Length: 89
Image 1: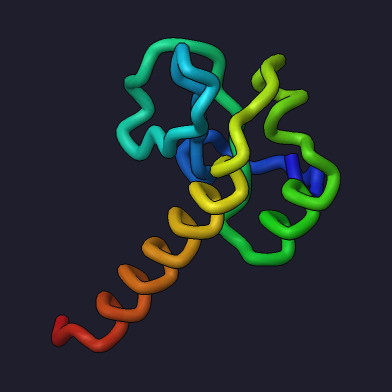
Image 2: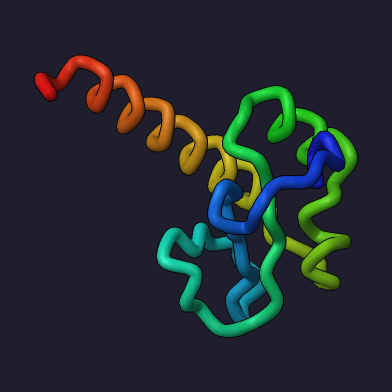
């Protein structure tokens, strides 16, 4: 959605809007509702936020905290990746 590239859904982050129009990361891909998929790369996230494409993809008006939810999700994923690289095989 951010860079408009194609990947299998399993390689993307899924976000949903809850009934209060707040954005939530659906890491297990089980939350009900329409989902919006985004690459877990900072350049894709930046493009999606700049173009406001998450709200359009979810067909809703998102709350003011939506950008923060996406950035926190990306940061936590980057942190988890970094911790995994330092672990012994």
